[in-house]
Length: 178
Image 1: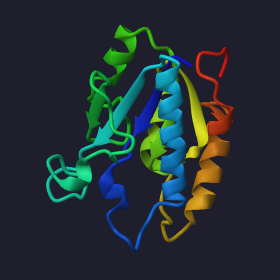
Image 2: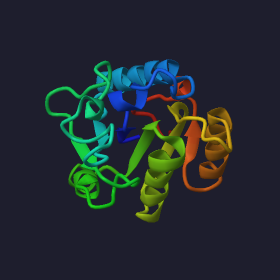
Image 3: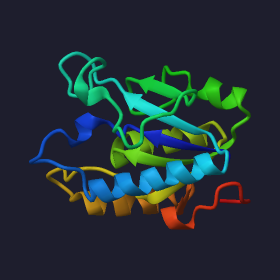
């Protein structure tokens, strides 16, 4: 893979002690491991950060907007701020990938059925090759489905043609193909 895309792993996603993302801390741990391994292999890490707008827990300038400190970008690592579910819609992501010659990337982060799903599908529509790290994205129970079922469903659905699905411990940066 040419890059790792880390979507919306922001403090606000973990702000409400009564409503936590499924397996959230373990997922953050796997994402941290992916970031460390990508950096060690010289693979670019690109961060995506959602701005939910005024009054939202993820509003720019609010504590919830900040990326989790253990995964935060190093100097020179790009951060793409978005306002929609797709990390491509009205952002600089497509231009950033093109400028760096990135055609294949892995995706991890939050929220499975929103920003992870939409970004994978948007990348597919652009002819990019996506690997979804199946155990490194998460979401919340939603009153209709539990988060674990949402994650399994999206791994199966996205893996049926939109993205390859791999577990974090099988990713080998710099290998072909991933």
